Image (cartoon, rainbow, N blue to C red):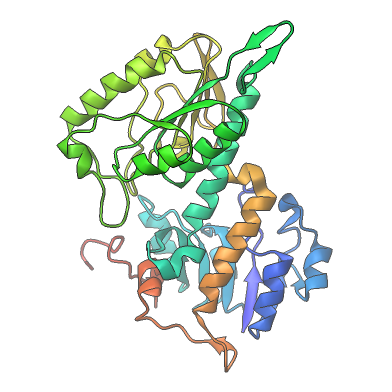
Length: 377
């Protein structure tokens, strides 16, 4: 069993799919591990570190590999280097990328999309969305503090008092909760909102105040899988009015709202941005799906009327070493359910609910029900 750790073709991606720690554990599973040169350098991992852990560093790492570990979906130009039937484990971004899925199917690789991991107890340690969103929420607050021209905590000095920053978190998933905790640690006064009623208690447990229109629709605004439902136009209007008034008094706003497979919902309009005080900062964590904030620009800090809108992409990747460490452990834990530990060889159980949930392509076809071509479905 050969496992290859691929270097990312996208030069803007600093993360890597394995660390020396996970390499040692993969070798313990009976695997031969090969790493492409420079794969971990942007995460602070030298080729020598992989070699010391027992891996081989080689430009031919992909040749004959039974498993390939990546961060992002392989590009079409990479696929000829993959062995037919190889298991490719990565964040596949399958929504709206039918041509890329077909390319992987045509190449004969078996693709697993880690972001489709089911929300069940057994899969928690494999949940890449949570591990990466946790870091993104932290980094969003750090980025906001860097752009904000004042201190976050209240400071009482002989020269006068510096008031605490007012921080508003929109969307209280994993990223939002970490943003709340981080802003509170920095001494800010924090409020937060979400359409899921279960989040109110979580927000308050972190010392923040919850803000929402709490009507009947709000009480039923969560899917069985724990995701937010799309709200009615009427509810959105009521919530927008409440938020619009609240935003006028905020110094920092962080938006995190995403609905799987859909464009990011627009939470902050240009009118809301215009109502904020000069020097205020908005951080849009949903920019890669179109953004929650009108006027946000991917990869940039836009300035509108003295208000900064931070639209950095791949925010977890801005903490590459930490992000790679967590991501590599997510991959290792998933890999462990694909391996027969007694015989030390691959033994994929295609009836396993986790495997079925994340399998995108197999035997030359797209097999995930949500992404199969309509004719096949």
